[in-house]
Image (cartoon, rainbow, N blue to C red; front, side, top):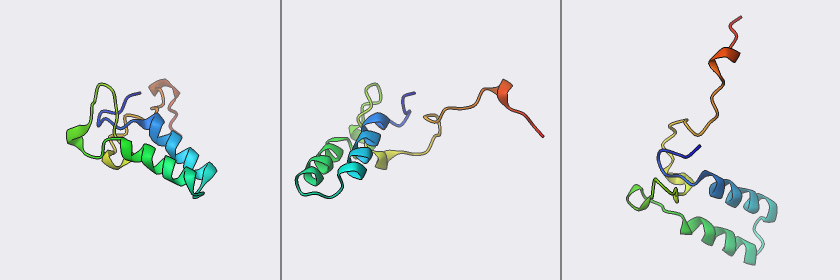
Length: 76
């Protein structure tokens, strides 16, 4: 589901996973940081039709999180 604020969620997770896997190892540290810096850092530069924003512009709408179906909710 696309982010209404324009955050590129898959790319941000890919960068986070690469950083966690490869860590701070010279060359990879530079490559991973460069990928993150290429993403838009302000709302003025974000393309909401083709999300290109980094995680810092997230405003926590919560629409990117899968919501449970109303029928599956049970109250005890």
